[in-house]
Image (cartoon, rainbow, N blue to C red; front, side, top):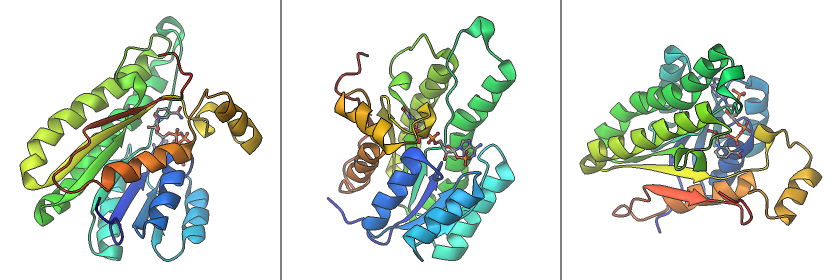
Length: 241
Ligand code: NDP
């Protein structure tokens, strides 16, 4: 395994859930963190908690200029970018016949185009230094067709295809691209805010913790440079999918 100490990591969706847990976990590994999401106050609080190795850059991944500014500020502040953790995402389940196409368009703009935009913005830096990682939070819904969340499942299938194709475009340039696909994670996405409610989910083996996913991020990034984890699927023990 390679040390992650000193790596500069951009995390989108860092204001809560998996992104915030991963920021804390990578800080413990000695990484320098660039925290991105729309909620400026939450990002500022997390950056203050982590200390001088964290920079908060409020960013909406649906706005190309904000994504460009995110990467420019990362390079200006820390001198480089080593890792993009493209993790921001929103969830909409439900019947297609009853859904809101405008809300779906927003979902696709965050879950799919947001990943495209962020990868496009960091790639020149990774290509110039002939190294780096792009890690995307997909979902079990990107590996199987989940009928109660068709738009979300389609968005995560798109992410899967993007990871697999981009990986082959940049592999010889020394850049690794991987997808991390969790099943149900008990966090803000499902409305879990109280620790006791999260603990009950874990005790029933019905959900993962955000911290479990953060641990998988470390596992993927810490592989030696000749190893790519292209896909990692992790499920709570009792999830019947
Ligand atoms: P959360 O709802 O806790 O986090 C979602 C994050 O995305 C927030 O930080 C939110 O920040 C950010 N976000 C949403 N819209 C935007 C935007 N337009 N621009 C920038 N950031 C945005 O849920 P999770 O931590 O669980 O979700 C993280 C990823 O994990 C998502 O891609 C999700 O699809 C995936 N996932 C989640 C699972 C689960 O069961 N929870 C299971 C499998 C995958 P803000 O609102 O401040 O912008």
